[in-house]
Amino acid sequence: MTPEFAVAIFVAVVAAATPILIAALGELVVERSGVLNLGVEGMMLIGAVTAFIVSVTTGVPALGALAAMAAAAASSLIFGYLTLTLAANQVATGLALTIFGTGVSALVGANYVGMTTPAFGSIFPAALAQDPIWRVVFGYSPLVYASLILTLGVWWFLKYSRAGLILRAVGESDTSAHSIGYPVLRVRYLAVLFGGAMAGLGGSFFSLVLTPMWAERLTSGRGWIAIALVVFASWRPGRLLLGAYLFGAVITLELQAKAAGWSGLAPEFLTSLPYIATIVVLALISARKASARNTAPACLGKPFRPTALSLIHI
Image 1 (tube, helix red, strand yellow):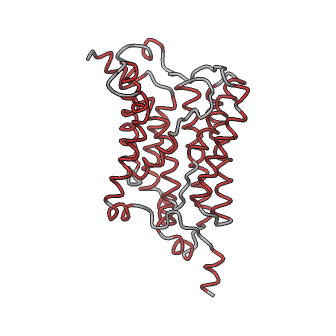
Image 2: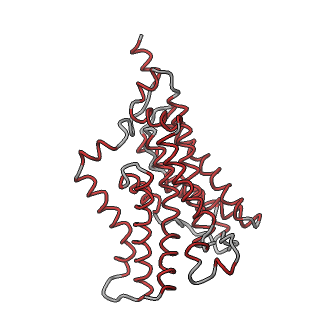
Image 3: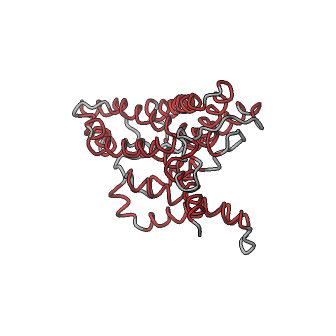
């Protein structure tokens, strides 16, 4: 294997891992607050179509990425209102959000199928970004570097900041946090908004970087991989980074196997490799329920009803 080929493989792994990492970071913060949002895939699709439309209209991919964050965050408010204010079932509402995002993105993007947009490429000089060796450092979209900064930021936020400790307290015991005066619903709303924005940013990576065009279901189920990755990482940002690149390697292996024309394996099997890996990971985690139960936020998926709590105290 030549150094140039190794660099090309690594760059492909980074590109495949980045949207999953960004979306999973948002879901990690949401789940650490005690909320389970299964609508990541739908929000990623909303972000992808919004980013593409804004980029085509303005010619500025960066504006498309920002618009994707805003649109997906707005869609997450639907989930937040139903599950936090109305205390609806979080699993059912998250699945509904995915269906909603899939349908809306297909409808809104119908007139943009087949169009292209300027790629959100490297901001470094072409001599570095396109060099066969140095592009391993300088040949990425700004969103790749942003994903690494976000990983470090989320780790610091949850571990050292006061706001992060409050968010973790809300996720571990919402009744205790409420009793000492922390605004549980406000904290969870902000977490859901952040999760939506990150899902939108992850979705924008598909339509601005990977394939600067729009097609229905462009994210190809990567939102579900992001959700599984949060569990795989035991709700820890460092493990999330490693897990995202592991899944990125599996996806790249699938693409390289197809390109090499492996005749011993069916194309359908190669396409299913990332999802088989997801199922295997979830099965392994289920096999060690005791440790998983110790690391998961205690209030994950449980509705919080402050009015009912007040009546109990009375």
